Each structure stands twice: as C-alpha cells, then as structure tokens.
Length: 133
Image 1: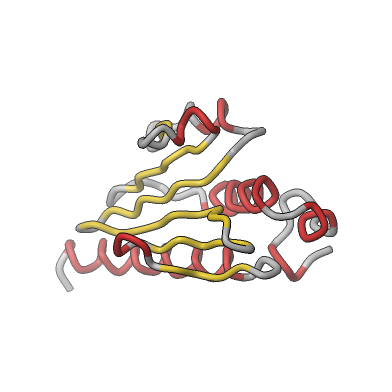
Image 2 (image 1 turned 30 degrees about the horizontal axis):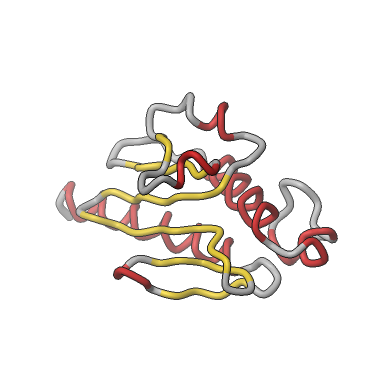
C-alpha cells in the first residue's frame, strides 16, 4: 500500500469517526451543501466537514474554547465572516497527530452552542453525544 493511500485511509477513518460522533447527538442530521458535510440540529449547523486530497477540514462553533483552540497550529478562524462569531476551522494534514478526544469535545461544545436549550440541557459537557446524560 502506498504512503498516499495509507494517509487517505487514515483521513477517511477520522472523518467517519467524527461524523458518527456528531450524528450521535439528539436530533442531529446531515446535509451536503456545497459538496461538504454539514451536521445540523433543527436546521442549524454545528459542524461542517470535508476532505480534499489527504486533508480533513472541519469547522465548529466554539464560544467557550475558541481562544485556546486557536493556539493549535492546525486551526484558524473560519472564513466567510464566521470566525468573528466564534467558528474555528481545523485542517488536519497527513502526519498531523489528531487529538480525537479534543476534536470530539469541540464538536460537543459546538452542538451545545447551537442546539435549543432543552436538547442541550441534558448533556454533560464533554459527554459522548446522545449516549450520556
């Protein structure tokens, strides 16, 4: 197996893991605007994700941890004016050590930031989506 196909396989596996995690939240659903994945709760996006080449890029809304998230070399404020509203984009290139638990915590924070209060109220901060209350 070539180095490129190994990197692509790891990227796809990480993408699938994060997608499944995001979809585990109450009332989470997916759409594909612009050819990229958008995971939404009641019509409001809390995760945008896509791959290009061997890179995985995803954006989440981080009202609490935005500043600390931006300290990582693989993050930046999201474009299109969303960065000013607390959105952060991570671009994971081949060879980047993906801190999966941290990425999941960001997805959870983003869900809680956009979900209606009743849905988010039963979730424990940092919990694993719909499975923990």
